[in-house]
Every structure is written in structure tokens, then in C-alpha cells.
Image (cartoon, rainbow, N blue to C red; front, side, top):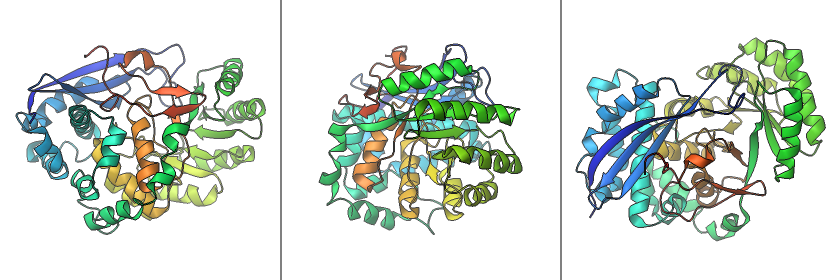
Length: 411
């Protein structure tokens, strides 16, 4: 049986085209990954990624080196058979835990390490991640998760029951594998794009089959936000699904004022309207801005904070991201909680959809989460060995073994 014999970390940063990736907070971002590379004794490698915006990625790589030490010489199948427990042991390493806990640089390192374990595991079994997860028995899925601190809303027994509840009806949902999972286009409206560029991008997205798209908002001039948003609505038409993303820029009163005005354009959601840890502010906005949903996720750092959002009814769209949480394992606990609380899942896709293309098929088939759509940002496609297959505005399942995270720079 394969064992992990070598562990490396890499700082991967990629410049973007002018204006791309810009929002109300991040004016000149790179897209970056803190990369974990695991190699087994057959020479097979697994690649894990945690998403960054360039700066500080080296800090996450340093943390990967510290946290990954317990994995060396571990038998891969034994590791994954008890992964939830081992992940907790790594996360709770007493000398390092104080630097988090369960957030920031340390948690991103755990994300990258975890995702590398899943990639290597799926490759060793010769199947794509979505199939690996769907084929696992319910108890084995539960073994992947650390349920610590979730007892009052989701324990191991309840998770297993949730998976079993929807197992018999899976065939009725498996057609999504042939039909494709709808995408939405974020790249139409980065905040530094001119109105002319936005108009052209909306038309191009519609020509490519996208019927949903997102605009960045949060300018100092909220009137200009509204003008740009109106332009997208006028260009896309009333039938299009629009979302607006403030990237945490507003105070709660600002978010309420601007959000109520944007509601005139009938958006599906308003994303990250205020500080991402402020559960009660999001609760207030969720109540005041209905029927527009409040969407959060890319900066909700762990399952405990997610538990609080769900309990407070402060989130209408769960944008859990397995490259920002503690990897695929913690993601599974979050989407299971989302199902129990009746909150749809539309993952944040800082990783260009590479892992989340697998996860949305699992969400729908295994948990009967409704089909919404998956974010599409195409800027880093060419850096992946097997980029996500997107056609006609939809994602189609990968058939390549692994998590689709192998990067050309680190073969």
C-alpha cells in the first residue's frame, strides 16, 4: 500500500490581466496558491492548493512545512480511513495552534495539506474526486470529518443519517453529470473595468451561454455603483440572474442603504456586504434586504463560524470554499450543515473551479442540494494540467483521477 515519502511546499503566484480580479478592497491582486506536494513511494504525486491573493503566500508555505510533518511515512489508505481524527491532531498541535486557532495562515496551510491528501488518494484509486466521494460508504465519509464543536447541530451519527437519507434517490440526480452544472460569470464586472468593458463582457458572457453574472460594487460613489449595476441589468435583460459583490467594504448601515437601492434591480444575492466575522450584522441585513439573499463564504474561515451563521439565519447562500476552509474535509461538514439548515450552496471559486467542479456534483447527488450554479473565473485556466471543462455556460465532470489541482509549474 502506498505511503507518503516526500512533502514539499511551493509559493505560486500569477499576474492577472489589467483590471482583472479587482474589487472594492483588492485593487491590484495576484492570484496565488500555497501549494502542498505529496509524493508516495510509487512516485505518484498529489497537489493541494490554498487560495491567496499573492502577498504572504510564503507564510502559508512555511506553515505547511511545520504542520505536514506528521504525514511523512504515513500509509495513505490508513491516513484517509481516519482522516478527521488526524486532521484534528494536526490543527490542535499545541505549539502552533495559538497562531490561529482555526483561521488565517495556519488554517490555510491545513487547507493545502488536506487537499493534497485527497488529490493523492483519488489518484491512487484511479478516479476523479467527485466519484471517489460518491462511491464511499456513509461511515467512511464521516471518517473524513472533524465534528469537534458541531455537536449541537451536526454530529457524526446525524451526518451518516443525512447521507443515507438521500442515497436511494441518487440515480434521479445523476443526470447532472451529463447535463453539466450551470456556471455564472464573475469576470464581466471587475471594479476597475470601465462601463464599456462591462457592457462588452456581459454580451460576451451571454454569447458563451451564461445566464447569470456578477458585478463588483463598493465604489466610494454609490451612485456610480447603481449606474454600473443598471448597465448590467439593461444589457443582460430581465431574464438574467444578477449578483452584486461588495467584498466586505461597507459598514452595516452603509450596506443597508446601498443594498436597498440595489434591490430595485432584483439581484439574486448581495455578497460580502460587511465585515465577514460580524454574524449579527449579516443577520440584520438578511432580514432587511429580502428577497435578496445575503451570500458569504470566501472569508468565513471555519466550520464553527459557519455554524453561527446558520444558527442566526444570517446567510442565504453558502459560498463555502475548500481552498479557504481546512480543505475538502471541513467543506464536507459545512455543506452538510447547510443542508440541515436549508441553505443553498454556491461555492466561492478563487481556485478557478478546479476543486469545486467536483464538489458541486457531490453536493447535488449525495445531499440533494438544489442545482444553482458555480462561479466561473477563467484567468488561470492555462496553468492547470487539466483545467475545468466549461462549455455552453456549464461545468462538465472531470474524468481525470484526482482533484484537478495539478499545476504545470509543479508536475
